[in-house]
Image 1 (cartoon, rainbow, N blue to C red):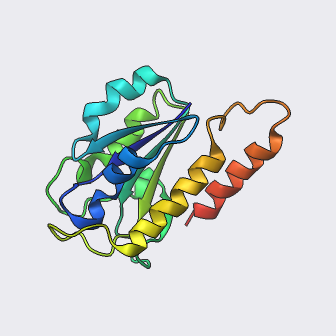
Image 2: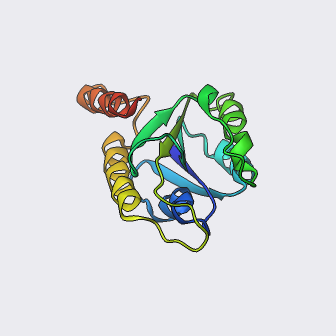
Length: 165
């Protein structure tokens, strides 16, 4: 089974993309957790679930077009200086999760606005739809595909490569 942990402040416009996606995304082989502004609070349920792939999803300032999606190396994550437990500790959380999950990926989406009270912007909404389609294609057999399903494995790897910066 695969997992997704949505991270972000639901009151700050596009920063809410992680929690919004975690609440809405449903697909075979996927389980989602809403980490909101304290993702460390759901580590135990994630560990008990025994996922083989975990995607940490958050808004990320990458100086790209709003809605751009990238897989971010945990060692390149930096705090934006905002208040919140996930800003300075997402890299540490990813590192800790990797001690018991074989594949941990941090996926960032470039926000347009993280102002208090704003709703998700159109480019971020479109990015979440694209991400949902990609994750559904990966499905729940990322690490141990059935012998007759080698094309799914290659397809999943190609999707991840397409997201790399």
